[in-house]
Structures are given as C-alpha cells and as structure tokens.
Image 1: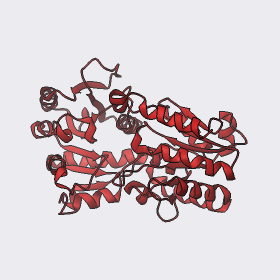
Image 2: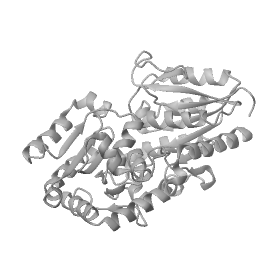
Image 3: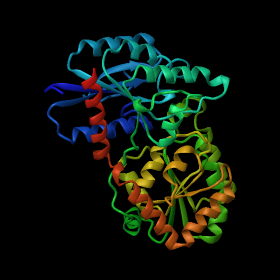
Image 4: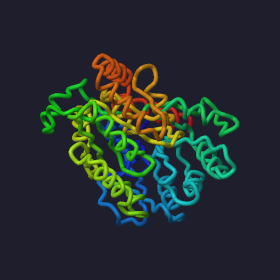
Length: 391
C-alpha cells in the first residue's frame, strides 16, 4: 500500500450507541495503534434519519442516511473519485441499512469501484420461502465483496452450504470478535472497587430487548437465592434505540414488574446506561457467573458473550449458535432455551463448585488469547492487503 492509502469503514459509529458502532470503533482504534504511517482510517457512518443526528469525531467524513437511496450512491461516487481509497470494510447487520432486509446497500456495492471486505455480524440459515429475499440480499453482498468475514465457524458453514447460500469457501474468512485485554480473574479486587465485596455477582450486559431473554434469568433468581442468599444480579445496558423508538420502555418496565412481584429488589440491579469499555471490563472482572439467556437459536455472533469469555468469566448460556461454538469443550455451560429452572440449576452448580468454576474460567481465558484487538487488527490489515493487491 502507498504512503497515503486510506481504508474506509462503513457502519454505525459512536456516539451512536449500538454493538456495531462499538465494534467498528474498537477495530479502527486497534488499527490506528499499529502506527502504520502508510494507512489512514476513515469512517463512512450510517445514520438512521439525517446527517445532523450525531456529533461525530473528525474521522467520520462521510455519512449515509439509512433510508435515502440516493445518499448511498453519492457516497459510492465520492469514494470512487478518491484515488487514495484502497479498500472499504463493511460492517453488516440487517437493521443497519434501508430497504427490505437492508437491500439499499446492494446498489452502493455495485457502484463502488474499490475492493470490499464485508464482516457479517449475523448469518441466518435462510431456509423458509419467506426468507428468500434475505438470501438474495446476502448473496448479492457476497458477490460484490472481495472477501467476507464471519465471527464463528458456524457462520462459514452456513454461507458455504449450497442449499443456503453457496458462497465459495476461499472467499470466507473466520475472524473472532475482538476483545480488550483483561487480567485473569481479579474478582475480589474488582468487587471492592465497585463496592460489592462479600457478594456473589451475576451479570448480563448489552442493549436490551426481549430477545435477550432476561425475563427468564429474573425468574431463575428465587431458585438461585435459595442457595446463594448473598447473590446480586446486574442487568447492564439501556434499551436498544430501535426498540425504544417503537415501544418505548415497555420491556424494561416488564422486567421491573417481575423484580417487584418476586421480591428481588435487594438482589437485582439495573444499570440503565451504555457503559464505556473500561467500566464494563470492571463489572466483568467482578462477575462470578455471566448469564446469556438469549432465545434466538440462529444468533451467530454476540459481542457481549465474546467479552465475557475473553475476560475469563464462567458463562452460562442458552445454546444459540455462537454460544455453542465458543463455550464447547468445557469453556462454559449450555442450558435449555426459555428454562428459568435450568438457568438456576446451572448457575447454582457453578457457584457451588470452585473447581468447576476455575476450570471454566481458565478454559475460556486460554481459548481467547488470540482474540485481543491488536491481533484482530493484524488479521484485518492482512485481508485489506490481499484484496487491494488483487484489485
């Protein structure tokens, strides 16, 4: 790559609060820390409605209105005219782009004359007829990308499957979700710093919506409290902005009612905030068991679970695809979907057995040493070099 080469990252970006924005920022920050003088990172930010929604940092010098088809083509034209742009890294999630199943991104990619690396944060099997258009959108994105990245091996299997998408294997790269470096298990220190010494801590974090299944975890609490009266469960994160736009705080109010009805006020704490990474890591360090009670079996990626596993926290999760991938071989405990009793029994088992808990923690921590953001940044830089060399 030349002296003034620019890599553009297309996705949501802070201060917009969503998982893709956090991922994009962490990846860009890690690449910048490589201090490679021949590469500059720039952001093409997706907005929900208009160009004045967010006060972006200076790295964001291109914006696209999600629902304005013309703005996609204008952005593609600007990128085409800039001879220093060597590649574009697209962060794909279905709800991020306009049109049915995000189809507005297709004309953008067809117009763009730069190499593209697309990261799929969701890869759905796409079997029923009602999913036919979703399959079409995904296949068109793959056809117009030089390389596609998936977060786990299950995603690669789905894309390769000829009955589903039929994407050539050589076009797909499996790159784990990046995680920050967190020292191994400093629970008591973290609990003291947070003011929760003497407590056993459970936690779940992320933008909140019903699919996260937190209501099942709350209904598990009475059974957990029976065995662990000093338990404290942190539900961390504000309501997902899209959910809040359509139904307000209905789900959070529903959760609050469960807490009141079951008398859990002294055992459940809601942190209705989008936490900075540093504070989030502190909560993970203090956590004895991390709970992921999602009930979408096809979910192929979870940044929140990646962070928990990467911190070496013992995890109890339902068997959605990503959890099945990262928690196998003794790296966590899987339980039945939509079963509060199974969640409670598994959590109690881990809390009661120090040997089991430590085994889960060590297995998870050792498995994720290659997930640190600097190493993930190196992998993406290699991909950018590959696609730009072939352009």
